[in-house]
Image (cartoon, rainbow, N blue to C red; front, top):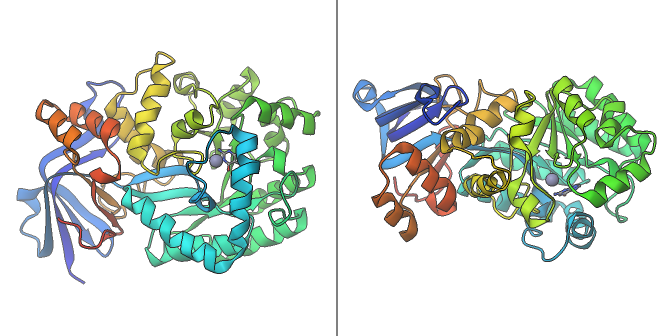
Length: 432
Ligand code: GUN
Ligand code: ZN
């Protein structure tokens, strides 16, 4: 197989930037090249140092090449739920989301939606995501089959939910155990796939089911865990009503052994001091979902407060409550959520977050999130002047930081020229 050499401006991070001046946290190459062999990055360097390699050259100048974006919390069966009007969390789930997820019992529907979902992800520059599937194993098969077809490093799992949901969308403790186990055996570690044990949230699981989820976690320590935490006041009140014995919301997951560095907790907005201690002590990962938190009126994620406790926050779209598949637009809204709290998200830290930062949170930085030699060639190619508004603004931009800020405030899928997954361009006919 011939090698590929991508040419363009290149940016990749080595560490989380500690300040706007922390230029040691990244490598930026004005005329750089990425040498790709068999889906992996063989070398990264200046064009002049790599141009002698025998390879198919794809010249992306003047565009900016970065590691593909990573979305750590998204719902695959909500592709037709995104942009549903007027409700906050619990009504939104009951009125829009649960009815839409019932349809994923049908394999054809799940397969069709999986193709659309993966086109949307890569079209927006996302090359890895951690997704909730529906309660049905059909949706898990559809999801991982499509991921395998594209050789994408995807994490996912069937939601376990045995109460407070309509018929057609519930399992039982026993069936959720058997189905989850079957899906782990079938998909976890196959190619680039990884499984996430997925109790949806405390409200939709009985104690018996959460206990079984804890058993699954103990039996499969290599799997991720994903769920939701303290997104909305009515949700928290209902959780406390259902689990009066728990010290707090996070205490429910604690009791059943669901916490740890592989556990991703969507939202984590309204936290009590003990819960923050517990997040820090267990190394669990809160996930900031800004477009969703604004859309559902859920609240403001305290990034600085949690980071100050040494907690590794991830960031994600949370489509379909999230309103964009774009991690750029996620940064845009994230910037504003943090501004409302007197926290400023610098573009260096922002772009680190959606690439290496999320990869580190997932423990996957040896495979994704950077352009280091040996990692997978998952690459996004960005045009900072993709729209008229961006082009005009870019005429007045003088620094890389300014360009990145334009991309995150004004950019979306229109700024994505091409997305490579394991070295293969996902946009047919994209102009190099
Ligand atoms: N909590 C439980 N399920 C969901 C969901 O699908 N979306 C969001 N935003 N929160 C949830
Ligand atoms: Zn969610």
